[in-house]
Length: 110
Picture (cartoon, rainbow, N blue to C red):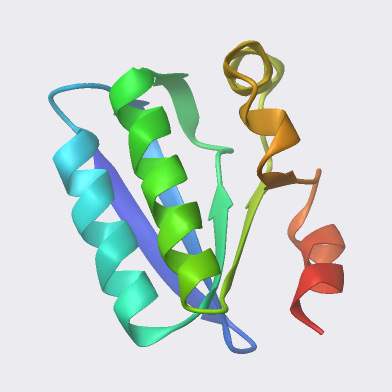
């Protein structure tokens, strides 16, 4: 597992690649915390994820809470249907900002 990080106009876009599960969640968490320590505007793109476990969901929730507490914003984008189904089943679609594309995410960063 790898996590790519890119600055797009002052917004950090994290793109985890592969599976986010118990054995790889720490890599994802380290990248998420590093991004949050340098920028309060973060987008996670799920376009390269084929699986996310509860350990991965925990990282996303932790990042969302950290950014909210620090007056930041987290938006999730590019979610394949099977990944979105996991977020919906867990109820995270009700508490996190999820949109289709990076362009749509920009509305939350004004």
